[in-house]
Length: 302
Image 1 (tube, rainbow, N blue to C red):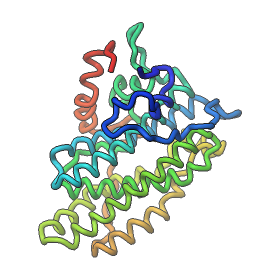
Image 2: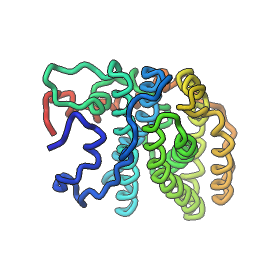
Image 3: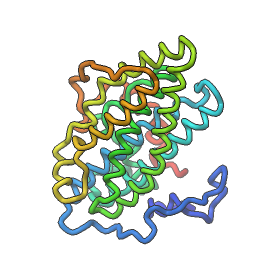
């Protein structure tokens, strides 16, 4: 049975291997970690910050899941699915942390609902309540678009998680330490594909050469600090995203140079700030699909 009162334990529970295709064998990233709220940390601010980081991962994971049966090769389908599962695991831990830090962020459900808090946050919030950056939600496009977005997202998220490993919140630090290892692979996978597509056929080169500029307008938002982020930087919990830009530019510049592609020089996207709940219509459509079963059966047990 799943323990609905312990979201963390449910991720590493080993006594019910039948739930998993290949067994469990997971290491608990929170083993021995003090999960109480650190002194002097605003629980409400921490919850919002965790929602930001969780929603980035959750929405990106769902977009990757949509490649199932659509990737160009079986090996890439498996790789994209595994990357999505890594991000889904990060999202679940972060959503659980948000609920623990401030229970008021969890949507109200019918009395007696068995839905755990992290699932309630994933499936029972509307688009305006999501705090992901817009980059994560844009439509998949072709395989080159997916690779370009994954390169941008994973390069940025890796730089973020590497710094978050020293967060004053032990839970965030533990989640970041595990996540950094995972996202290192995500970044390297995407980088290899950018170089491969650029050096492949005329068609593959045209596709990736067009994909990078399509994604680039969403880059600036990644480094635009939100007031909640800045408030937690002051307490040693959060990361100043503006400080991530030099590392990001170095990695992206190296990859594009290896691919023989220019770094885009185009205007930023305007009119949407995902951290404040302003999103594209693409997120509404994605959430309608992702949340359909849970909303249809709010009392369901899975």
